[in-house]
Image (cartoon, rainbow, N blue to C red; front, side, top):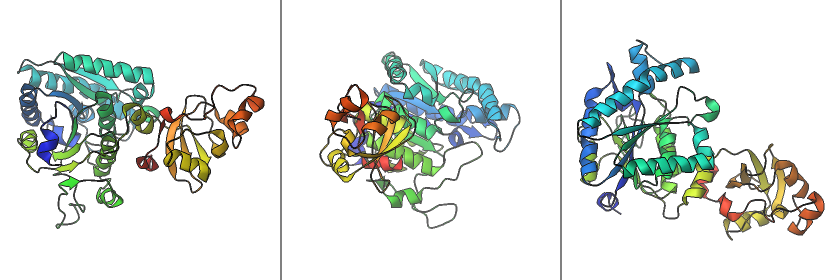
Length: 379
């Protein structure tokens, strides 16, 4: 599959723009923003729908306040985001407004996506905006986010939004040429990897955690985001956002940046949501029979195959299923709480009623509410 084959049918794309691209010596780099907007407008004229995940609010706020270097405390970061977010949106609004296009601000925290009803509401809102020809501009709600509800960085947020919008392509614009085979800051022989067919351990090791003063996600974060996005069947490109004409070059089929090919056997939207959006509340250890039933036979998890329970979780919570070696096999929504599973584990389903006094389900986790995938071992 060539780049031209992948890009020719793209009608809906998500473009993530990092802080290192958007910022310059004077805070926001207005020239870069106008340059990227001009190229996005060209794509809009070709019939493409565009969603933007943007960084830059904290960097903008820091510049306004004359602050340099990393902000040390959460209140400082939240205050800087509160100052900078309005200016960031005004810059985007003015840039797109020159072409008669409207933008819409959407600020999110992780808790907005872990609730299935709110997840679907966000999807419906985004769909309506795109149907109206409006460009949604999404950022993490840094002014209220705390560790428990943070995405971690906008690379992760963009991966989550790719699922919600069911985009055809995610482009991550950053301050490097793409993914290198070695750290380019330490090796002059480092070369850009133009194509990644599968995200192997070698690929992961090539990505570093180094970040800049204005960004929170290093290359490793971008590769982990690529892992999530390609698991949903979406191609993913890391490309240099400050390069003039970068979007034009990509859609002309030029070999710019790094293209990650989508997985052939990918997760559907609901299972992707379970696998990558929800944070697990507990763990179940399974025997070899249950492992085979889940991995090879595509069956639901029954209580008879459970040999250990860990965590304090309740009905409907996401939990991980492990084998006896501790390797993650699956992640799913449980039909029973931890205390109940502790009583019925190892038993046949016919014994559930006898032990609990009721039996709402035969399965501890139904197959429809379970994501079984090799990528889960990294969650």
